[in-house]
Length: 336
Image 1: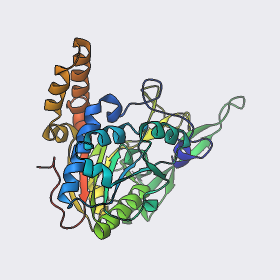
Image 2: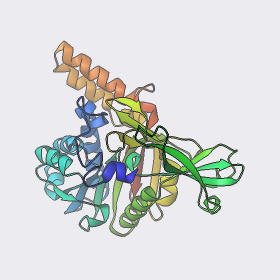
Image 3: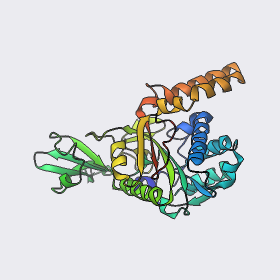
């Protein structure tokens, strides 16, 4: 999964712009400016609660085209002291996406990992970042736990070999699987993500020692559970994750309970559903304000975007929001 997504020359993210109508999927910031604006105001509120640090690191990991950060900065400019104090930092490995981000956030400085960010208090946004980190899958069999691996199937001698799943016994798996799923029935699949654990641990340590807050938004489940969530998107439709590595977006659902467990040293809030979170931040009022100055067609687009972001049959329920803060930080908005 890591090779398919992040290989320097052949990886999905490193060789294309995957977003929008011409790509394979669309994220919340690309749906409406309201999303980034509200997150920007959330960050201003947290900056106030942190005591208005100057300077501070205003970072986003996995920033796509930079749309979210651009919208957040525009909304935050209502408080000039915030934008003057902010050291805007984008964590991005794709040279193609960095070029797009430069157009939208020319004031940013780019980094390749969370650990590379400058020291100091931090406000960090992570929208649909963790779902793209590589996972491992384990399946309960009559032989015990086995890891699902990728093998080559050679069938028709005139056709190229294809990838398929295989099982490798792993008697040690039971020792690092979540306790809630360790006794799952035969056939059950359980997912872990060492890459996610590493990022969250690094982030929590930083929040504990240097202060700040992070806002994590992604699709996934609130509690650890068995299930195969590995999926691929190509041309805005589901695809076989093994069919075209490097040419489709491969993701897995985020385990928010595991995020909280691994965030040792930080305070965790949530997860709450994205729809409820955005409503608490005032997205409906913002939509009404925008519609007052819009044409009828634009007003319809705003209403459609509002439903996509908050509707329980759209992104409002599947997507969850969690915040991590340093010790002693007042509770963040949206988690009442």
